[in-house]
Image: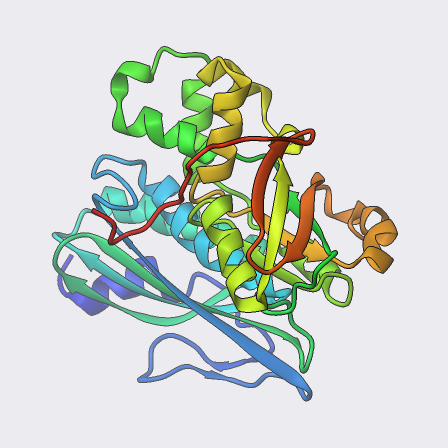
Length: 322
């Protein structure tokens, strides 16, 4: 095998059929796409770095899934339909076994969501993956962080805390014998972006965000942008039986649920008049949704357990925090 372009051609070009909105895909200086009329384009970019977002010996198929799922989840949080992706891959050396597993898993998830890889780059250096993924949605309709209103109900999808428990196992091999350690490790890498939920929430939810840095941290983005506060009943947090058995304590599991990063579930707010429609609107999504609290006036933030205040000093993940 020789050269960057041989690598690109072998693992990333010609693996998919062109979407109807792709005029020119990978292989030229730029890709050309043509969205329809009255369509807005949502664009998101994420970088995953070896040693920060995944360990060096991580399963490359899981790394590919995590990298793409993280970007798809951003689109889901805005209610967008994923369409196109560009991949910049930095490799310390050419490892064909790693590349084969990585590319296979990448295209498996991309094809599932109808995403076409339309370009990118490869270079030599410390292992990192940068993806720009784009999606479409009706012009003038999107879920944002800035429209939550006092009185809205606060919801989350799925179950929370499993990703943090999985990361514990990844970073501390002595935990590998604990109940469901391997299941939780896999959940850390193989989250399911909630695209259908995001689409169904257009016109029903006031605001949304995906949970990448932890519920507490990500909810703060909504509260700040919308100039509102919130209360959360920790007894309502959706917890998996696997997490409960792994940590051995409901209160510990609740704290995991509040701080676990890279969950890629959605947190969203719904006005009172739409609350009764949420269950039926999301019935086709096959995803559990749970009301965990309510939006309050700006400056209010409270955790409670069925009305009794819980004094937990919690925070989420921050790349630049010492």
